[in-house]
Length: 304
Ligand code: FO1
View (tube, rainbow, N blue to C red):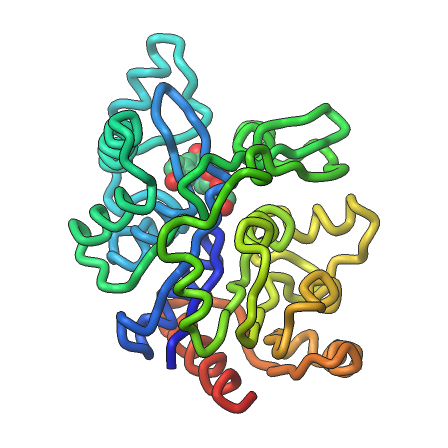
């Protein structure tokens, strides 16, 4: 069964890592959000792409979910000593990725080709695609003004209340090479448990149409985000955060929806939207959790 997954950073990476344990590498393609990308210290940083790649390569930091395992911080410490910005923690090994990517982008190579080459170098057999080769930058309209995504997320620790989102560059951003093929050839599209507002919406806006069955996994369990500000964003936008709110967010796309056992009572209102549900344990704390959830999700997709 061919699966094309839509993924943001940490939650998406854990989900595709689980899928990779069950399906052949040629049957798994991941389309990754690039709205979180930004230019920092002269480098182009692609946090979600790197998180997915490092996770599939077995190179990720298990505690943070982002960045590299066994990392050292000499460069960023010395940047800080010189008065430079240290709020975005770039590790020494990670910086090599940004240096080489930035060099190639400046030489005119598309991000999709660079990602393909990096995946080969890291021994990743699955296909990882940026959503677009054109730069898209998520801007968060907050009560403190409009902030670039990483300024909001990391520097301001998601504190300013959100009012809306804008995806700079999205109107002219075409899907990257391979994205449309991956969407057409898949037996199903899986929306990973990533932030609907800032990780999945930019991908959906770039790809525009999907003609295959879509299944989503809720990133909200018991009204709370597993990681990141999704639940806080729903609340600030005047929507009660819940697995139901996420299902309603994707409603027009969904054939199936996966929600946590603690939210079992929400299955009925979701079924009433015309969406089939799977109730299972969706929290991915261990490596075994990732593989078990992926197995449940694949079984559910086959049953649809
Ligand atoms: N997230 C943080 O909360 N603090 C950081 O200092 C930080 C550094 C960082 C460096 C490289 C990278 O690829 C990701 C990094 N992240 C950091 C995570 C990242 O910015 C966010 O988790 C995503 O953009 C949201 O999906």
